[in-house]
Length: 302
Image (cartoon, rainbow, N blue to C red):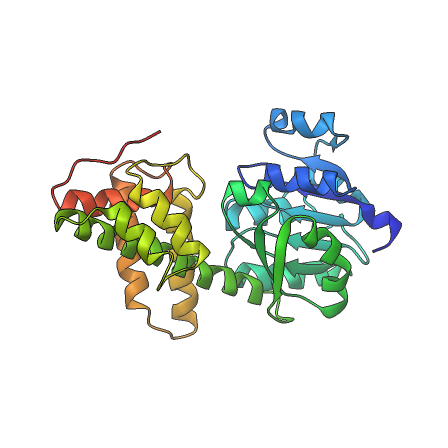
């Protein structure tokens, strides 16, 4: 990475973006930041970051990281007034770490190419505590040269990355596939643990046993502990965003003519929770619907 690449732009200081940006600063990068709510950057300003008034100004040094909520937010940052689309220029790189549709990723890649810039997908898997601890997993795709140039940036924010090809949409496809597995894990663990509870077996005992033997994987351990606790954590992955991701997955599946009936059922479970006003709660609130169906008391909320 060239010396000039040590100064990069960063857009999006939400629950995930803020600790990611902090890790970049701690790794020696100088950040130029744009965020709609400027006060969210106060901590980073104390660490040496510069806050600017437009997305275009963020792109002054040729590299911009975006960590935003959805397709509309990313598209606006790129194509809107004072967006980064016309500001990156020759040899610029847009490192897109949001979970967005494969279609939008390909459209943005084509748009950036018109001005000589490149699009690198690197959406992340992990909750905010993993972001703070640099334990995120990145799903990376784009041209070989652009990916190599971005590797120091990516490495500063996570524990590892998976290179899934040169198609700018491939990283986002992989992330959606991973989220299907995460949300199905939450749903099936909720059903299993409530089954054990109603059948007279302590769900804590079962969760500890199953996640240290047959299903000894981080995802099962993390969500097994959360779901068995009977408490709802602070939002690490909002239910509204989970629903957004499952809709993106189903839309992409339809485009590829892949039927995903289990994902359709999961989307409907999420939709029911949304209708009950749970969109801003953590996605593990899915267990609430399972408890209600079983006639059990509600879980405790933060």
